Each structure stands twice: as C-alpha cells, then as structure tokens.
Length: 214
Image (cartoon, rainbow, N blue to C red; front, side, top):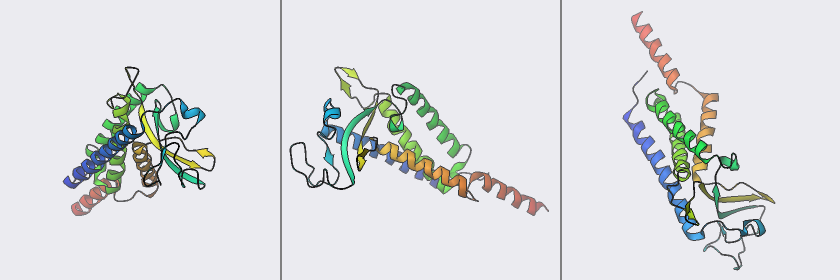
C-alpha cells in the first residue's frame, strides 16, 4: 500500500477544521441573534424567525414579502435536538455522543492507518464526515454552554428550516449537511470505486511488483 501523501493531511485539516469552525460559528451567531426556542413554537411555529431571503432580516410583527411566499421557503429557527438526524432517538444524547467518538476515531484510522487517504474522493468525504461528527459532538457534551434554568443543555443546536408547501423539513444545521454530503460521497464511491481506492491501489502495486519480478 502506498504511503499517504502529505497533501492529504492538509486537505483533511482544512476541510475537517474549516467545516467544524463554520458549523460552530453559525450556530453561535444564529442562537445569539434569535435566542433559544420558546414555547411559542407549537402555537406560532414561525415566531421570531428570519427568512434567509430577507435583506435585512424581518422579525415578528414586521411585514416581509418573502416569509410566506412561494412553495419552497427557507428560514432560520432555533431548535435543540437530543437525538440524531430528523430527531431520531430523542433522549439518547450520550449514546449518540459515544457513537460520535467511535466514528471520529474510525474515520481517522480509515484515512491515515488503513490508507484511505490515498483516494482524493475518500479524503474529502471522510473529512466532511469528521467535521459534522465533531460539530454535533461538541453540542452533545454541552461545550456550547447553553443553559435553561441554570441547567446545562446536552443537545445539538439546529437552526435551518426549509418548508415545501405545507411540509416542514426537520430543522438541521451545517454539521448535518457535512455528514449527509460525506455519506452520499461514500455511497457513490461504492458504486464507482476504481484505481483511486486504497484497495485498488494496493492491488495495482502488487501487480506491478509481480510483473517486474517476472
């Protein structure tokens, strides 16, 4: 198996580190501006939101030509999630936190010990997954510092809300975007894997060695 090029470590650091920074910064900025989600979510689900297409953003009580216009709308709305994507497994915060730690270790091992970083595609995919994993892990262990009634919240901060007609897509964040993008890239890799994969590269290297020996 070929040694991992030094450039792959740089790509990993830029994508994983940059993605983590962007996720945490956007969460902080939106929650600092809009505040925590309140009890008005059920009665008036769009209370206190920003439309992503408002410049400048409009708040409750102000007219907005975009807020309720169109079949597809995008808004900022703060939400805490104690589960995984789409709110699956609510209340299992520490289970998902543990899985996140295992996933982060697995990603690093796959890339730089097993040698998946030989593949540019896998390097990008797994770097995005690492960024998303660490971004949500940060929240799950309470490093965001969000408190309610003096109690630290162990939950993921979500704030991106898209609606399609009358259907509200589950609120999510950029860490989720990175995770899903990386997962899709892995699926595509499984269908179209070629000589760029570490396994294929190893086989090609063995064939070259055999041909030289012959």
